[in-house]
Image (cartoon, rainbow, N blue to C red; front, top):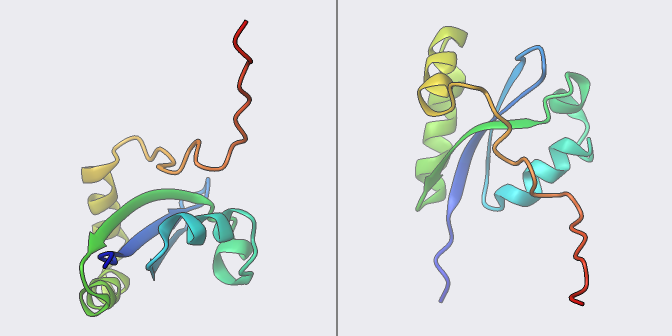
Amino acid sequence: MLKRHYYVYIMSSQRRVLYVGVTSVLEERVFQHKTHALGGFTAKYNATSLICFERYATIHAAIAREKELKGWRREKKIALIESMNPQWKDLSYGWFQKHRYAPER
């Protein structure tokens, strides 16, 4: 039986508008945010960069952490992000680009 993981993640816009969410399928959820498939907050503010995530073994732990982060002041969220990703790089960079392979000659 495969062990399932749950993720608490933070998305950011270029202007550093932050969104905190939880999911069990991180790549799929990030793709949905990047393509604005879900509408809502991340689409409105174009929060399409995955800048921080944490993995949990249970959904209960992930939801508790999500609620904790959502209750934090912006400054504390920024301190967390910069402790893990000081350059605010999009951690999902390259996940969704098509790859072109040159045939061997």
